Image (cartoon, rainbow, N blue to C red; front, side, top):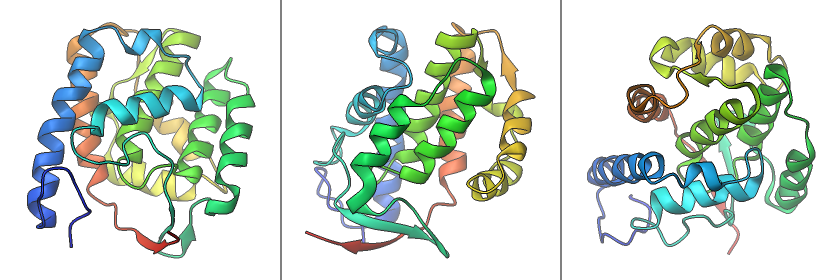
Length: 202
């Protein structure tokens, strides 16, 4: 079953194709129109704006906190009742160094504030923080998919692996359209693993 959407699509595979096409175009617009540079790097408000822009033509819940509990395998993301408090704490986390930025990224992944599209939005959010604070971004084409997924699964307990992977893929080409596009393309490559179990609360 496909998520309820503005496109009226009921087939999940068809929805995934349309979602990719539309949100890729919107992600490129974010870069080209300078909207990203107007956001407050590291704040949930920035992530919310990114998510809304990417998915507002597809889902009614674009930019809105999820109303379901989400788990993947045996791991449960932040319970709904603690989600807002978790996001407030993430807002307050330091982000002056590479290590602090990745720690903040890991916490946002645990929070998983949206019903769908968390990974794509959060990777753009991460690069915005890196660009703002240390003048670098991740070249996602240099990050192996399987290594990344394993590192992210382990990151709530041990974040040294994800830090190592991302640090080795840093580039100073922060204004490169090509590097940004690689990030957009690879975001779908990394999203492919996502299978969530949900419990509707509304």
